[in-house]
Length: 362
Image 1: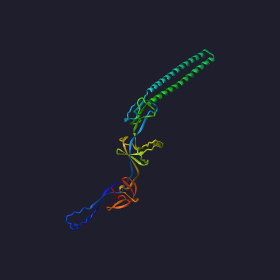
Image 2: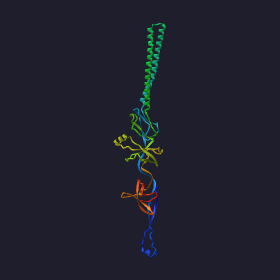
Image 3: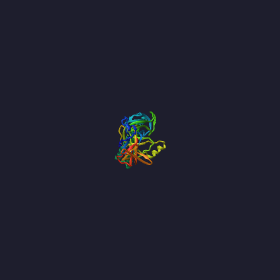
Image 4: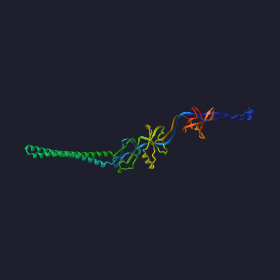
């Protein structure tokens, strides 16, 4: 730490007055000696870093919610701008009156095809039983072989027909089931829900009865659990510099995020300068909210345990840095070599030793 102390140098000012020297008893009072004061500091070891501060703000990741699987007619939007929502809360719904009618018709069709198959299989089985009775009668009556063979072929033909009816009917039933399932899945997609806990920050200008296209955002939700620091200045911040964000009196480590190169160039060519995004290294306090001011601290050229003096103690002339070292109350010109320099302190790499006292200009 900077050790500042006041050193007083007494300079005696000799006032040569004839009356004083010739007659000390005249009652004339001489002025007190003049006291000269100036600030000093002790060269000490410390950690130094060149730090830059920028104005930034906390923002929340925006989740864009849309009807992803289908277009339709808007029935209702359940939220208002600024509402706080929880994950799973319904946000908006499409008109499903036509869809519900289609589902009812598909369910009826499935039931009809199932009953139809049962009926046709029953009828064919009845025909098979009759044909077998006729075959048995021919055999019992001693009919000739050609008649019996013809009756056997008739039975086999009916069995094949029954198998065809069964397979074809099962295929039709499977298709009807799939259609009904897809319609029911579509019904589930007619309601969009909040993907996270957060705040509704945008609602598309839509009214009941308006047509909504698939994939067009309807509601924007700011994700409370995914906040970041956004810097919109023009300065370029190094990816390698240690960076923190001072928010509500607490300093948080943050890390600069990289844009996809093609996405970044596309934005620039469109006349949009994207903000610089910083993610929190560790989860911040629950008090940190979107909209909070963040003082972005960028630490450059950090060094530890270096010898340093106040920057105001450093002077420069004719290509040389120097200080005034205090010896026996006198200022002694001393050339020095400097390293990292900040607004407050400057590293001394040569010319001073730890504990040396130097003059600090006001």
